[in-house]
Image (cartoon, one colour):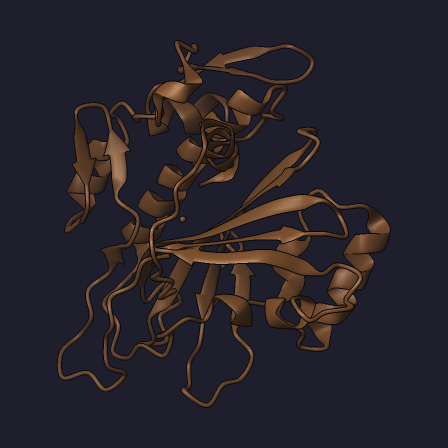
Length: 271
């Protein structure tokens, strides 16, 4: 997702809010006609304790990173918090410093009890998803996901943590081919406002459900084996009242430059 824009200055309060929900859309401009394969690549660098990874070139490298300590202290505004513990309902605490530990004890049975736990979960989950994607992605022969495609994403990415009525409406709208751009039109009951792009990130506010969203591109590569470059994105949502949050990664695909509707598959269900 080519979402370049001028930098935005944040107050401490707004910066804390961004940290509560951020979890992967910087792209490199690549022509659709390729003379050589496009290698899989990270778009969002992975931060570990004492080092940052901007590219991965081997399965051995991925394996080594699974046991490296993930850096999750993003800013001093969060203070001296217990960064390795995840507190969930009904008050159980899990410990994880590496992706292996996260996958073994937290990822599969966790519901955040406090906002800071949601921060930590989203950071670990996005790193875990990016490593999994890079392990399976192959070089691509063509790239049809260029330019600013963020508002072309199906409205189904808005489904997180919403009531059944909202979910049914969103499913129906997605089935009709509606995109975020449609929801950004004046008069829509779930009007999307405060739409901003910065680097690899798209943010917006859902006025109907009072939710803030962050969409971030994590990695690129041919994930489904069709020769076209796919994109791994992470979608995070936080309710304005502080109660409830959501994270889901998706694989976005376009196999033809004339294809109008982007294909969106939940990561984990994508093959």
